[in-house]
Figure 1 (tube, rainbow, N blue to C red):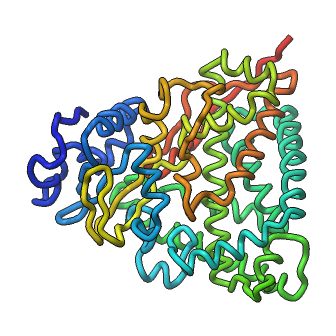
Figure 2: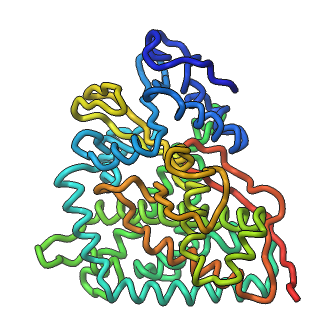
Length: 430
């Protein structure tokens, strides 16, 4: 697809008269766009970054959003929550009111005092003792998973490696009994497998109910565990969240369920995708892999950040304009929708030299893979980095080399850079 050369302001925004979007940015509304190879999508974002101001992306008659594709614009919007509100929802489409009423509001969809209160409860629950225990557990789980993989020699990386580490670590940290974990893994897959993916009519009629039922079962399960921990607390995160903190604040059943769903879908999915993309990138760039292996402790932090920047596990989040604001020379009005395209911001030529290159020595590397700062910066950023470092230390430090085989099977989602599967193989090194 080729974007016509047009500057914003020449005529009405695409889509206002019901046009499906022939102007710049219109292709972002086309489900087929997200099925294209990543290079084609990144080229389209590069053309959008070259325009003078945000462009309008139609989503139907009278509906649409302004696409924020530059690093500076995404970062500015992220740090002004009073102007760019997360409510009523950061995903596209926004969650229906009845869904929010039934399942509770996720922290990512809240603003102001409501968001600050929930985030404070969660942050206080992540005590230094809990975090230290979680880090020790991450290293132990990573070593065990790699031991089991070397013994069994599976050939599919997502299910055998990438999805296991974040799931086990979060379940251990939360204190989820072993008997629930297989079902939780299944529910997470059902709840997230079609987010941002265009589906046929039959699937559209069937899948929403399936995904919501998965969420409902998962939330009922964790609510029951929360009730048990109020009576018999342990050293786990659920116990800390449901028991009152220093200010007498704690999470109720719906709030705990909403937080757990966020942690499982966001924490597990994003980390597993980053790990999988990481193996593919290190396979495709053997020089970078050898550099990392040559001095892992020196280059590991840079490698993790470059994997996250290059793959950008979350492609976009939505915001609603709450107050009139001029961004990059364009006036945004209350009620306007904007979408923060992290996948584009992380390839911005104004910030990153040779942005399409994979370079684990890139410094500085101010990627927006965990958000653009502000109150919604990812709470799990530190743990995700620790997980990725621990796993790649094990994968690259053994006498058997692992490599990706073929290309990752991407979901074609407009929301996250999800990998369905990736074949891999073992090469014994001398």
